[in-house]
Image 1 (cartoon, helix red, strand yellow):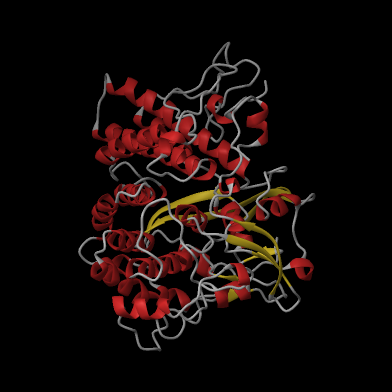
Image 2 (image 1 turned 180 degrees about the horizontal axis):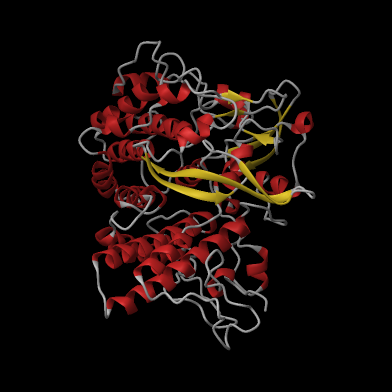
Length: 529
């Protein structure tokens, strides 16, 4: 039986409730688990989280990658299509079609769990079941949120006129369901409803390892990101305050200790995703090449975060702070591949056939962190023109990550204004190939004119967010939110941009990823091109 429209709506892959395709409408297989106890539901909810991640596809699509050309031509057709904003014609681990399926499978598991919780609560209600309901609702909301940010336009106040996606609240049981995409405003309202109900119920008492689940702080961090993307600045500030508490500094990453670890092997990646770090609010295990692509490996190196990008746009550029970030923060590859990386993600490969050399790549990702929450609050303060509070949050982030051998600058509004007013914008007509970390902002929401204090503050925040979220895929969402334009450049043998092959404008429809081919083939409405 072919899987139509949304593959995961008739299966729960990764769980023992997988149903045989040829007879699932006729009978329940003998090995199917009945979700009739708290423990079974708790175990089942492990599969309510996506098992693929969007980081690699987003990094390839964003300005965090350049084409090093024939100097290091390690690529494949999927990477070529993704980097050049072409609709996906092939798939691989972490491709868009894999993310689509992974998210809808997670949603299907969440819906099955919610139904089972409702049944069990009729006879044996408990605090643990209430917490599990909260977790399932948050999982359902999160996967729908990811899908929206990948396959829809960014939310705006005109979202009612933009295409949404099916919001699944019940397990799918029909063979060939038909779905109306609806509009994006309604879709986001449903995400928010699940998010708020989940927040009211979520607790940590039923978890064995809370940081691999929607624990209370992780749920609030999700709320921060949701409200940041939907322009509700007051809610961002509210939930960020609840995450960070009265001493935000204690919640931030210990970069000083991390930089002392060896930058070969797995010590740094393992330390980055440690559950003992206060900054790590939620972790996600994933089938992904991210640990290799964003690690000390030459694998898939044609499109990379290059030395040129690092020293002209983000992590190795002198910014408002004096000097550079911690000297040991960034790592290079020693075999000639042009890559500059922060070693965030461990890499492990599971061989299913050692002789043939095939299997599955694995990693763990810090999905929500306190450091990102801090910068979201700084952005919200800036949008509310509370510049002093925004600067105070910026000061915390800068002090935590810059090289302690140099004096820590006092981050003030005047300092930010002076710095950015002296910088030129990237990608003006006469210099579309040149790099810098100041780019024209074209958000759908209103901001003050270029050169204003608010615009300069946003430039600084976006620069910090770009560094903080490098390799995480969130830069692509910031590009969508702020209408940032991107050239596609090919570098020469010296690693300098040589010529432009394409340019992504603020209104380019390719900013919205295309619906996967097999889903479109089944009759689902594609995104405009």
